[in-house]
Length: 456
Image (cartoon, rainbow, N blue to C red; front, side):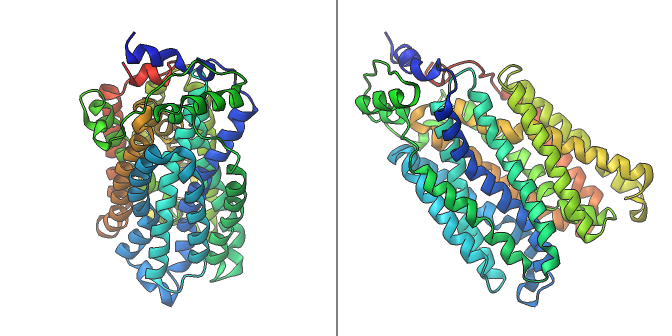
């Protein structure tokens, strides 16, 4: 029997189990990191509306400064996801599962006491290392414990957590705005509270049985299986080599290209629109406070999209759900661009035009979170073997952050030079490219074990 055939049934106790409280606990503590990412990434959009008016942070009022500040955490994620994802494959899932949360707590505290533009930029960049790491680690832990028929639901809940965090950020920002020019410090500091709770509770999450088996620790893997589902398999494994370059061998290179590029184009549009939603709504005629409230409402719509993904990703499949998401992004952004080109600014927020803008924003948030906004956590786990699973998720995260940085730094410049319509058109094209890539390159991975998907 070949190695692939042996591995196909070796984790049947995990793969065929019914979801239990341990699955839900591991998932909740893992997606908590994504919740904190959603909160942090979104709260900077609110904080920027305050920071740009402060003399110590005056550089943030320039197009480049605003883009750099919005992208600071994302830049850190670019390096943290790939490097610490690789360390996670070498040292174990739980090792960095704890340390990335420590880094998050320390640098969130430092952010809240920043004294100028560059101190805030530096602290947020280092914070991004921890957030990027959690993208690679949290999803990997979820996938390696989840039953095969409900793995998509558990992984897609990562996307839901992001949007709950984003909506929470906008609500917090809206409520704290009346506190004045220093309210942004409290906005960041609030993120420390859930992070401490997550750090304490994560201590009881076990190491991945799959990782232990992949490192030759068969007895440890059996013990973890029994702890999670009450029984274990006859695991007899040997130590497997961990190499970054496995991503580019003939077996996985197509997956590597698809996952990185599709997520790249998703993030070009998503981050550019998402972080600047309050600014965009102001440009469309809303007041400062109403733009923050509107951002909270639109983030809540994204929660609905994430729930729809959880409900459909295991039955419809990963590929059609992802195509649907990109299609909705393209159509909604294209219509918004057309509106921005054709309608005078003072007419944006009223009557039929206002209803059209709101409906397109709702369509964008609903479909982007239904699609790649949630399936990026699913595909990254199902396209790569255990030896490089966290590295593969880190690869996609890192490449996508390049797209995010492009969107965040390009959008303010395009708007200042050519107007909002061209900025929205730029993002709509990114959604179209993501859809085309998914149609032609994405595999379907539902209802299969991780070993069936990656060891053939």
